[in-house]
Length: 149
Length: 149
DNA sequence: TGTCTTATTGCAAAAATTGGCAGGAATTTG
DNA sequence: CAAATTCCTGCCAATTTTTGCAATAAGACA
Image 1 (cartoon, each protein chain N blue to C red):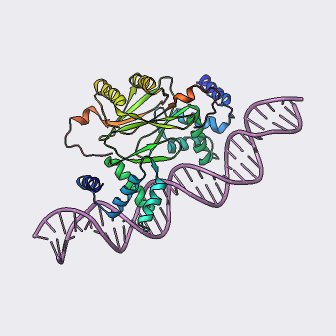
Image 2 (image 1 turned 45 degrees about the vertical axis):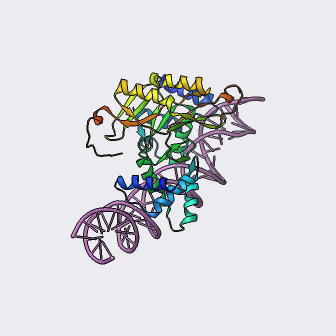
């Protein structure tokens, strides 16, 4: 655990940014979320550790972490943005438009597509955390499913 | 032109929503954007036609249009969301992290990946307008490029 | 370790987005 | 074509997110 934290500190530092307690608290709070967490959840967790941290700091810090690649963010379309600590194994998500269920998919499937983009367009894609929308296996069998985005 | 508008009206109506002048103005304003436009640009254009249209109406209407598939939205990561009238040919975008340039790519490249997701996960993807981030051909040759997200 | 430089923070104010509500408008029926 | 029924809209308030700024603290260097 602690060596992970040190690695994160190094990344922040190496990128020319300062390692502040606020930033570490926020990073911890995102980690504690396990999978996806919302900004509000992160804020609640951070405030338990330090009452004085301001919302604006949280916004600025999350933005920074996403830029640095420490945290991945995904707009789920509900207006809610999810944050998640970047994993060693990049992955992506499928989200069903009908039932709202989410599942992870391996990066490998994407990788082939990325490779092809590189060949055809000479563009090196490094997007890490996509959310693809569609209809899940279960809902494909249900005809009268109500559309609940 | 006019027959397109009628088609849009039909879609709105068929989906059980009312065809109001405000909605048509907003649809026009998105069309006039040609490619991508921001919410602010749409608002400015709409207000030229009708001074009384409220911002909340614009927010609600754009959200509706995206749900209906008339308009596609893309979060560019800058915090800015782009809106674009849905085209007959779905397409996606590559955005360079360094120089910020954007280019369109064909849907075909994606389609193969979508097919594979269907095979492996039985999930039918219908995402229409992805923005993939990475490094463009030009910037790959520039070593000392400054990171400007 | 102490000083210096400058990024970062918390605060406050502004700007953007969302939500509730009553009046008005679009459809549907007859 | 008129009346009835909801949906939409504009207004207003609440909430969320961003921004400007002075004080503070992190990191570099001696």
